[in-house]
Image (cartoon, rainbow, N blue to C red; front, top):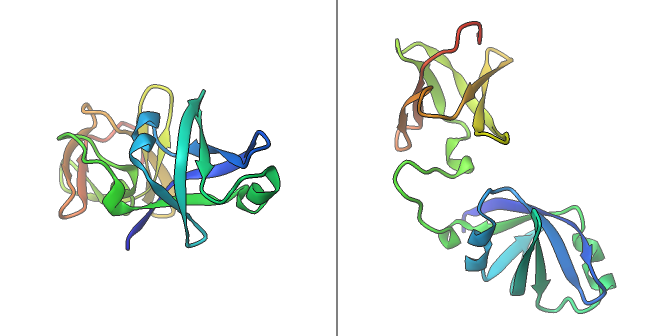
Length: 162
């Protein structure tokens, strides 16, 4: 099983064993597809879920009281990669971009993607460039080619970025 980190449990919610999670995605509605999550390797069945602002409130099977969920607070949650919905062409999951090699349009190696920042306007690739961070907006103007199979991205460099 290939587990993908999707959210963090940030607190309990109410007295009946619900948890509030902070998702690592823009698409909160995508969580409706998930039937189970994993926390510390333990499979937990989702009974119900609802969106509450930028959070999702989950009711998990076997967690009926506030004291039941205390051990889950501040834990990352995972799903089996097979549960993830398919994306449209040109859409990517953040975990797919991590560790991709980044090259300039002139085919010069720049570095590897170590993170993806979510800003209000767009995502930004955080590239490890010889131990320093280089930031490239993840928009068509700067992403010239993206090859998931070979884990390579070709970008238009921003003056002064390196």
